[in-house]
Image 1 (cartoon, helix red, strand yellow):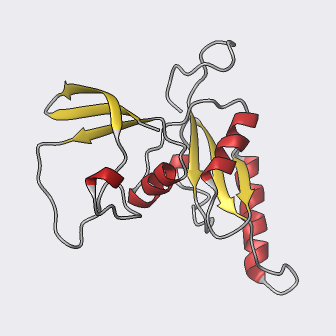
Image 2 (cartoon, rainbow, N blue to C red):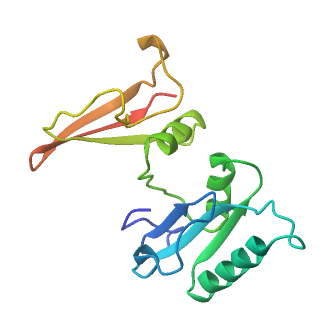
Length: 171
C-alpha cells in the first residue's frame, strides 16, 4: 500500500508491507521485519505431517516468533497463492489499495489474475539484456501484439534521469 491511502474515510493510514513468501523462508531477524511499516507475511500452509517432522516444529516456532513481533501471517492452500483470493482477504482486513513491487513472476501472475488496474513502469537510461536476463513481466509469452495487455490514459513523467510511464489496464 502506498502512503496516503484512505481506509473507508477514517483518515490517512500508514502503508502496510505484504511479503509473499510461499516456502516461509524469511529469517526471523530479517531487517525488513524490524522496520516500519506493519508487515503481513503470506505463505502456503505446511503440507508436512506434524507427527513425523522436526521441520513442522521449526515452522511453528517461527510462526510464534513472528506473531510475537506483531507480524500477521496469512496462510493459503495449494502450491501458489491465488491473488484474487488474497485481494479479497486483504479487503476483509480493510485494505483497499495495493502497490505490487514484485519480480517478473509476481507481476505476470497479477496481470493474468486480473487484479491490476494501473501500472507504473520506470525506465532508466541503461541498456541490459541477454538470454539470461529477467523481463519486468514474465509468465505467458504473447506472440502477437493483439494479445498483449493494452494500456489507456497513459502519462509520462521524467523523474531525475528516469522516465515513469503510468497507465491503466484496458479491461
